[in-house]
Image (cartoon, rainbow, N blue to C red; front, side, top):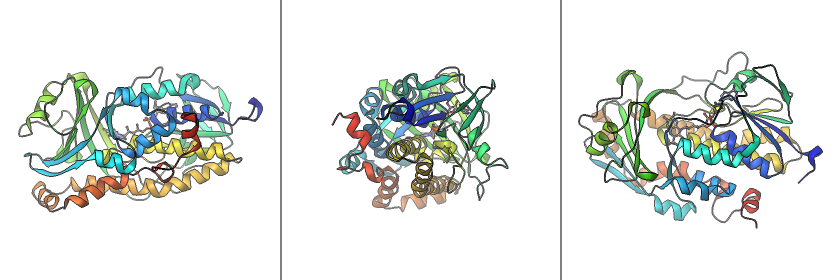
Length: 389
Ligand SMILES: Cc1cc2nc3c(=O)[nH]c(=O)nc-3n(C[C@H](O)[C@H](O)[C@H](O)COP(=O)(O)OP(=O)(O)OC[C@H]3O[C@@H](n4cnc5c(N)ncnc54)[C@H](O)[C@@H]3O)c2cc1C
């Protein structure tokens, strides 16, 4: 570890999932890190998240899996069915855990953020809104304060200000964004027997029930905006009993709407001393439940490259290059899953019923596979330090 004079100085814009994970990891590897977060305190909506082996492998390498396990629930079975309850496929994730050397969990976003905030510690400056960033590593806050660093990471989510600074003419990606509407809620009850994660298809798109630690249930309806109300969640008439029970038990202040859109990832999304991470670089649709997982993978890869390289700017370009193929694949697969929801329900159900189990497994396996240096038998510098080996 270098002395204070030679430490890598990193400014991270945004204290969300990716920014906090990156801060804690870089700090432990000897970097001088400050997270600039515009919110006055850590406060996020209670969305449920599915965490697959690709992300639990990252969390374990960071030394965070134990803390995550305390607030999450094992996710061992996923069942996919039609609204009428006809099972299309059932996937056993404990087989994945053995094969990929990492388990799957369900967790809520506030609980994840709390673990990550503890991990990032006093690196976070709340109430610090970034208004501009320059490729020479200078950052300006809304009160006029200026800071500078060797590296600036825009981890400021969908609608990233940092991204706008990189592409002042507008960050226009090729192609048309795919749009979806989501209604979701957190029920303070166990909705009744069923798989750990139930994915269902209905008239307007898809729905899901994710069972959480503490006997709670996260539910969501996601579909094409033209077939879903902008004012209220879809009616649960005709849906299986656990869906109706979960929605009915949810207080109105635990129901949220999102108008969602993706954007094609761009090759080389950084400039000079700036790079991007997570949704700021590559917002994808939540159909595969992988957005936060990708932000955490980004944090892992970026921290490894930055700390193992004597040239931080070259490390940023290499990170963007290394991440691009996986991000693009995940973007395309999330989009394909969304397009499936546009089909007429009868056609879609017939099509899905014809898909053989191995193909369903392959669709779920591809994104859930840990990135190369985290597959079983590999060990990274961060993992070695975290485990004290
Ligand atoms: C309905 C829904 C369901 C989802 N389900 C899943 C799932 O099951 N599994 C999964 O892995 N992912 C899921 N996701 C995606 C996941 O939530 C996101 O991909 C993830 O939160 C992105 O993390 P991030 O760090 O890039 O950004 P965020 O977590 O959004 O953090 C960005 C941070 O930057 C701060 N910020 C913004 N602008 C500024 C500024 N100018 N200055 C300073 N700070 C700023 C914000 O306040 C925020 O704290 C879902 C998303 C949605 C909407």
